[in-house]
Image (cartoon, rainbow, N blue to C red; front, side):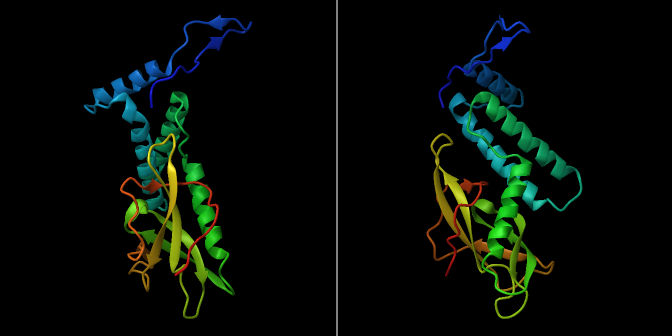
Length: 214
């Protein structure tokens, strides 16, 4: 993304402009300087995707550790808010805060409940590979019978390409036949589906449609 002018003009109480204004290029340089102080050198055109990757990793880590009442959860929450704020200041596309990530998880659980007929149960699940590797959440499924357990297939949205004009796809996960020793149901990418693009990343946005199935 090439630097463009972003108005950072402030005004006094009488409405008079206070000089100077700051360009996006200047702000990007400040961020790159902070990275360089840590020994991490970035080019201006990769800062956008770097921040997006940080947000994706933090969101997945948050969902992996969400039931731990300790420091990592608070750290991921603050990191997501900081990255979202920084992306807004730089004029990049929005990234999700922890509140929005948890809202996305709640929507996935609601979607999973729609196909359940009869008594249902809430099951903890974990995704072991692919773009959602490490993510844990709760999904709904039948309480009893041959289909007892969370959904056999779980479609999840991913984004691909750059952050200005991303593409969107769906990857489908398949659950194991039973839970692990801790009662968590593992999911892996379906091996009979094409592999997701190498740059596929989680897309924590409101679901539009569920396209699961055999």
